[in-house]
Image (cartoon, rainbow, N blue to C red):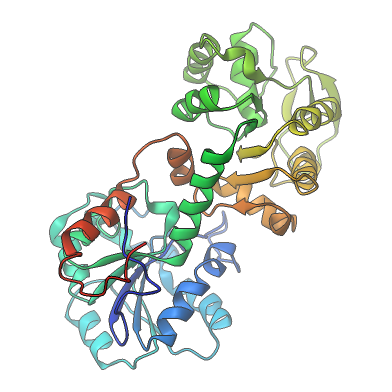
Length: 405
């Protein structure tokens, strides 16, 4: 695919609609200094240097088309002020309308204008053209630096590109380049798939085609064990997951799948509950598997030593609690010692690598969960396709031949 290049696009002094992914709320719905914001700093600084007015647009949570005070983007202002202390930051009370347009027109160059939560409008997730056109009237140029949203055909991701020259930001460029490079250069890849959901069937089938081995951890391991007739106690599972696991295990390359041989189990799901290690076939009816055991961690390391490329999606235990974060932390630390290319994707896994201060030791930690999965699975990303189609449409109107990547 071919896109316009932000570095060479004639963007000086323009009003730029910058789609970012600042969806960083925690369970308490309080934002924290998050790597997603830090990863957009190069694009924002570049636009500020180009004397642009930057219209920041993001979604937060799932308000389902309603105004939910707890999900207002105004909660992002303290973080933005800390990140850009010398830049005027304007928090707007809406994301479309005359008041928004007026505030941007009256505002200074080299300023940030933070729109209200895009998902306060149901039209955002409906990919509504009218809503997208209203967003587009705020700006001269559209830049998408929200890699984590590229798998969504939403108004601020796909439809808006029908109305403005559209460019990938530096973060999107970097994500696409790193993920594509990992897929192209690998000959001995090993994929680690964890987390709690088995809604990654396409990802599994891609892994079964491309990987030498697939190491399965987290709650995702339990549907596979149940599919093999092995008791899993009270560990998290549902009937649909077992059926999906059975289908995957029928694949001609299913022998590539490596399952855990022991678990860290407890009787309750609490942070400091009494716990013990048991073999995979010794989980009792009253026990819950919350992390991988030491035998599995050691076994996984033996496999990982063989890889030239490692793709990891999904934590290997209940990593939110320190007691059950051992496997995720140990495998992350081990990957940092290898010469292999290491690609980590998925919101919780990426967050864990930053929390454990391991991200800098890995080749690439993606800001995208579903987007990274879909890209690695070979699926088309609506947001990325839209940027390519926009280039095809506008290339004759943009005179600079240097504005292409």
